[in-house]
Length: 122
Image (cartoon, rainbow, N blue to C red; front, top):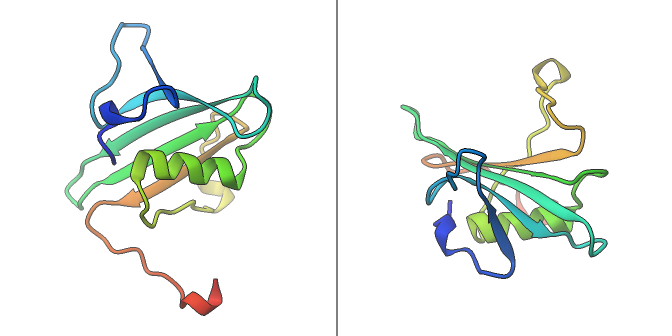
């Protein structure tokens, strides 16, 4: 995860938690302008999860009344993770935890190389 204190001002507004906390350099809540209508905002939660297997970066992106577009997800990924390979996972329905109907997620492992198909396939 990029250092979240160094995100470009004007593009991103960091949201203060009701306790007054604003997260840290690897975790926080943010709002960004959507690429759709000017009154829409992207709500972003960025988190790093260290664990014994190497850890993960995670970003959730949502809007109030629709799912984010591919372009919006790509904008958020580049802003928060840089120009790297990351996942949007499609899990079996039995593994879904849906706390919001219009949220999508981006994942990146810290220590594992994400396998890619041959360039000619994509």
